[in-house]
Length: 197
Image 1 (cartoon, rainbow, N blue to C red):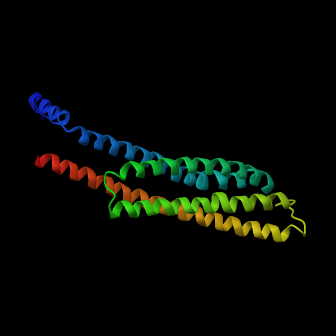
Image 2: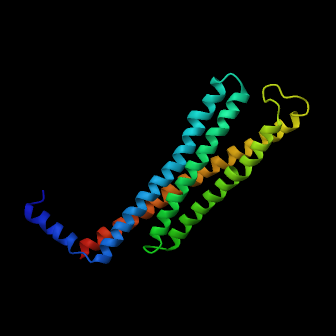
Image 3: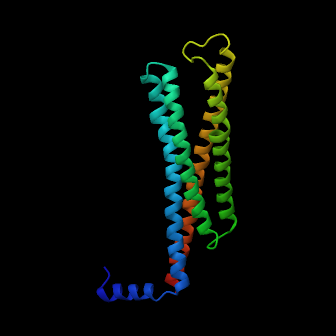
């Protein structure tokens, strides 16, 4: 158990740190906050939608047309939430750059770039084409002869959309694990350095 003298000594040690070191700790804290907030917002929103929202809509609502229309509106907002998460995660990497831009940092940054590219592919590319097809298909419940090829095309695009989103979730989880290890290494190194000093 620490005595009052030991606690006071620890506080004096902390407050006596050089301004550059204090700025470094604050920057690291801000980077961790942005990283976890951004990635959990991004990955969490996508996972919740895929597991708890989309399947329920198509089971509960009376028609595919109604479920698809609602799904389209929610997906648009979900893509915006993903973009906010990506921005926060990018800010975290910008803050980390002056602290430790080593090989691990570059690998983690590459994973983030992959996530953004995948997001752009399904949120900007596939979504636009799917919306265009949806406007020309008379009904998903009872498609006419002219709409049948379009429905098949739409289903193919939707399949690729799901694949890309699933890939993004896996990359996001990988980034979460790798970056957590990265943060722990920095913290352990700093604790070890403080003890030796």
